[in-house]
Length: 241
Ligand SMILES: C[S@@+](CC[C@H](N)C(=O)[O-])C[C@H]1O[C@@H](n2cnc3c(N)ncnc32)[C@H](O)[C@@H]1O
Image (cartoon, rainbow, N blue to C red):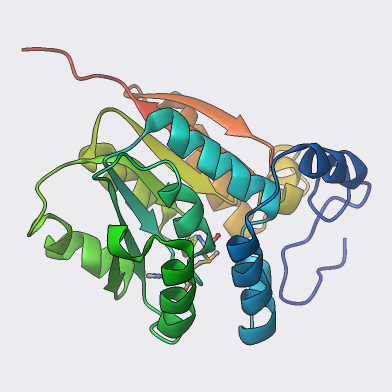
């Protein structure tokens, strides 16, 4: 299959999402719409950034919001802020004193984030960390002024370090806490890896991560084929000694 420039290849019989696009549009249509302010942030992302396709789509944003409402987290960590759209979706379900820490190495998007987080009313509950995610995680800065473990860790940055982020998350989510990893279908290419039809290194690495999460003794997991795939795992409560 010919590779599309700048994008992972996809399975030809499927649509843009690697799923059935008409059904996907239907699901989006019958779900809640994003708010006007979120729609403004989506437009700003498409008109003011060079890789707007990194933005999560409307249906995924509503799912993140729903998960957040179900969990009512006190503390969330997002790895990969981009323009802060998913940050804002997660913020919707925070507990009354909840906070979301978010990490990105790109400081050029701060003005977009600031403008839209203020308009959305979430600015005061978001703590932004600028730097390479591995460095920020290792630095201990996330626990300097707040010792609480995370209720949710959302992983949506570079794919090379996904396993490192998952291992870090396993050690830093609370008992019963959640780890959510985006882009775990790699636009369908993981299936070609499983069938022995592809040795795309990124897809192979993502498939290995999916297997790692599904067989990890401390995790319950479900992989949702939404957009590019969301892997959702819950850390078992630790046995009392
Ligand atoms: C897919 S985008 C995040 C999208 C965002 N979560 C959303 O849906 O609105 C990935 C982000 O990760 C950031 N990123 C990539 N590698 C990184 C790294 N090693 N450390 C920190 N941030 C990184 C990029 O700058 C980019 O903004």
